[in-house]
Length: 211
Image (cartoon, rainbow, N blue to C red; front, side, top):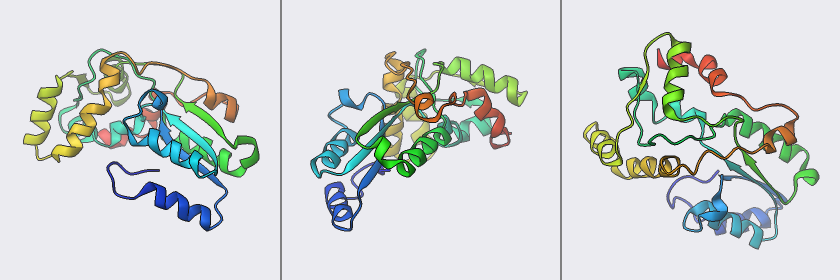
């Protein structure tokens, strides 16, 4: 997993791993990264290939766990999903499912060497639908307020958020807003033999987070 920003020199890290005898790298990447040469995941995938390591790239969709991370405060305190994603749908994925594919890829290395998996859920939802599901599961009214990017940034900065991180969060939701994040893939089911976790199940599993 590569942290946001330039916290490590990734090529030096990969080179050192190779020198120490690492044979197989499972890398958490981003769905549709092949169309985004300007982001670090694209460049890091290229570097892993360049150094000749066996790889498994997990190109993941939008994490369900974001509801418990940077969306958590507004959900808990104001019972609203406050993010500039418009009316677009996204193929939410549970990071527990991503972790399962990572574990399988490492434990069955030869089978999954030099493979690329796009990991998504099996349904695409917009945030209005997510708010409706949360309302049903939590038994409280949850709303999706659909702010503009400008409204989102201004409010989050005024609430004391880190400006650079807020820009990253806003950027994450632009593909959804543009209708580009709804694609569903079946790689998870192909690797594990089971259906991916649905967002209702995730909310039920972690409902205490928002109450």
